[in-house]
Image 1 (cartoon, rainbow, N blue to C red):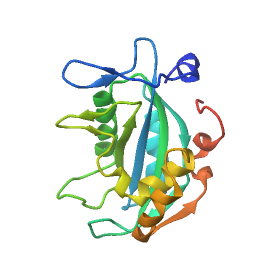
Image 2: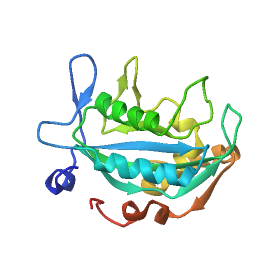
Image 3: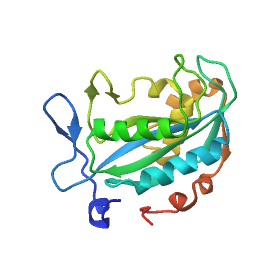
Length: 196
């Protein structure tokens, strides 16, 4: 977990590393934004557990979590998803954070038999400070986030200055509906910085 001093004022700019990755300035954290989703098993429990496990990782703190949103699958079949967005502070590089998210997906039983297959857990790195990355394994900002109501609705809840009603309204036909307030996330839903 991050020390409170690192959480107080995360850097807004990431440093570019050789090879194209991005990292916080030395001795600082940056804010990152993660999309969470699941449409198999106990979806809410899977999302809560993912937040708890990520928050327990050295170099990561969950700072805020949106409400839960139910959504129909986009470009796929299967049960409805539960989705949320979380604001993180991290001292990890963007690629290292992506690897942590992918490790959590695998531990939760995530399989990738085909594109957009149903998921026990889906964790996407949406934004990493001000970084714009186009790497073989990671594109930030997430390339489809501005086309997905299940990302923009919860992101708007946390950052209304980033997502306008005019941007979100045309996407609401995707079948996204708020299903539970931020209390679903437990300790992470409280106001202010979240660090047990």
